[in-house]
Image (tube, rainbow, N blue to C red; front, side, top):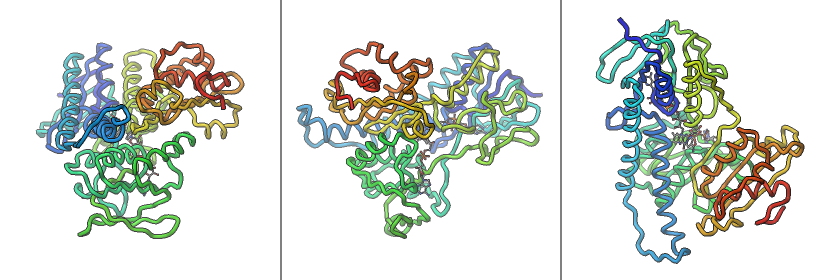
Length: 475
Ligand code: FAD
Ligand code: NAD
C-alpha cells in the first residue's frame, strides 16, 4: 500500500525545499525527497545552491576578497600590515562549516514546518504515484494529490574535454581544490568563470579564461561589460575572447588545451582546467513510464507560465524548467506553485528577476539593458552616477563603477537598472521593488535615501536621468 501525501516534492534545492515548507505552511501534508550526496558520501538537502554553488562560492569569494583588500587596500586606509598570509585549508574548512550549517538548517526548518524529509531517489510514476528509494536501498511507494518536480541542473560537459575530477573539473571540483594551481585554465567567461577565476586569481594562480564569444558578458549592459572587463584585466585575469576550445588532454606537463581564435589554432598548458560553459537540466531517472510529462528539445521539463506541466497535479520549478538558472528564480516558482496548490493567488514576473555577479566590483542588474531598449525602439533617457562621486564609496575605498538607470522618455517608466560597484547585489533590490510596483524614475528621485549610503547612487542616477543630479556632472 502506498503512503499518501497532499504534496510530494522531488528535489530539495532552493526551488524544492521552499515549495515544501510553503505547502506545509498552508496546512498540507508534505514530503520532500532529495538525492544529493557529497564527495564524502554524506547526504544533504539544499541541492547545488547550498552544497556546491551559491553558498560555497560566496564563502570563498568573501575570504579571498578580504585577503586581496588586506594586501592591496589596507595601506590606503593607513593600516600597516606585513607578511599577510593565507591558509587555504582553514578557508576551505570555514566554507565547509557554512555549507553544513546551511544544509542542516533545512532539516530544522522541515521539522518545524512538519515536512517529512526523505533522502534518496524519487521517480514520478503514472497516476501521481512516486517511487522512493532511500540511500540505504529501501523502496517505498507514495501517492500524492500534487507532485512538484524540482530536480535542478548539472554542469554541461564539453565534447573533447572529459572531466577527470582531478585536473579537469567542473565548478564543484573547482570549489574543492586543496592547493592553489600555479596555472589555471577556465573554459567560459560566464558567471562561474568570473567568480571562480577571481577566487583563484586572488590566491595567486595565473588564470587564463577562454571565452568562445567575441563579446564579453554579452548578457549584461554594454557599458557595464566594458567597465567590468577593465577591472577583471586589472585583477590579472587573462581573458581571451573569441577563443573556442576544441579539446584538452592530460599530459606530463599538465592539461594541454587546444583552441581556435581569430589568429588560428592555439594551445595552452595549465595545471588545472575548469569547464564552466553553462549548465543543463537534470532529469535522469526522474520520469517513469506513461507520466505524460514532456521535455523540450533542450531537455527542460515543459511547463506553462504557472509551472504546470499540463498533467493534472504535476508541476515543475527551478533549473529543470525554462528561464534563468538562478536560485531566487527557482524559489519564487516553488513558492508560487505551493500557493497555487493551496488555492491562493500567485504570479511570477519573470521580467523582474535580478542578476548578480559576486565579483569585485560586484555587478547586478534588473530589467532591460540599454542595447535591448534601443533595439525595441522606445525613446529613453539614461542617468549615470559614478561611485567615485559617492562619499560613502570613497570612504570604503570602493569607488570603482557606477549606477545606471534607464527610463522611458515618455512616461518615465523605469526600464532597467544596472550597477557595477560596491554591494551592487544589495542595491539592486530597491530597483526590483520600484519596478515591481511601477514606480517611475521621479518616484525614486522623490524617495529619501539616507546619507551617506551607497543607496544614494541609485537616487542620484534617477536624478541624472532628468539632468538633475546634485553630486555629479549631468552628462
Ligand atoms: P538544484 O539546486 O540543483 O537542486 C536539485 C536537487 O534535486 C539536488 O539536490 C538533486 O540531487 C535533487 N534531485 C534531482 N533529481 C532527483 C531525484 N530523481 N530524486 C531525488 N532528488 C533528486 N544562483 C544564484 O541565484 N546565485 C548565485 O550566487 C549562484 N551561484 C552559483 C555558483 C555555482 C558554482 C553554481 C554551480 C551555481 C550557482 N547558482 C547561483 C545557480 C544555482 O545554484 C541554481 O540555480 C539553483 O541551485 C537551482 O535550484 P534547483 O532547486 O532548481 O536545483
Ligand atoms: P554561463 O552561461 O554564465 O557562461 C558560460 C560561458 O561559456 C558563456 O560565456 C559561453 O559563451 C561560454 N562557452 C560556451 N562554450 C564554450 C566553449 N566551447 N569554449 C569557450 N567558451 C564557451 O554559464 P556558467 O558560468 O557555467 O554558469 C552556469 C549557470 O549557473 C548560469 O546559468 C548561471 O546563471 C548560474 N550561476 C549563477 C551565479 C550567480 O547568480 N552569481 C553564479 C554562478 C552560476
